[in-house]
Length: 133
Image (cartoon, rainbow, N blue to C red; front, side, top):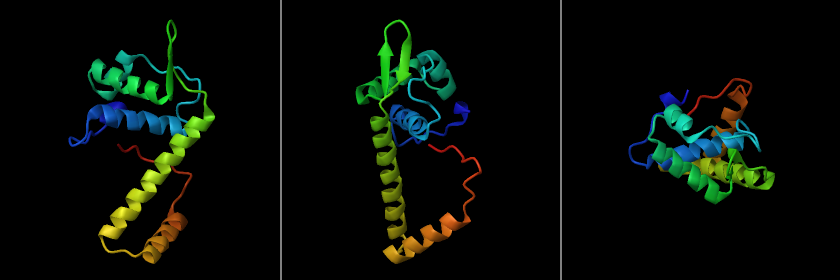
């Protein structure tokens, strides 16, 4: 699963890993209180050096999404308000990116709204989504 990640060469890999893990937390794939796999396991799965993975997890700890217990490892925060904020921030980022891209190719706000409505009506929300980074 992770071995198939296509990293963007224009962005630091540790930031792309952080984003991927934030998506897993925001989507509920990684639940509050879940134990995070060990650094070496994650490094193998993501196809990166353990130091890169350690840096990503340290940043997530600084953000409060992950916490450490000395003898037990790392865990996903149980702070549902923080997880909801991350989810909302990511949603806003996706929407702003979409609007910016549509504006670049000449769409007006009304046309963008229309395209969104069309897409919402045509999407089957019961199908699993593809993973993207």
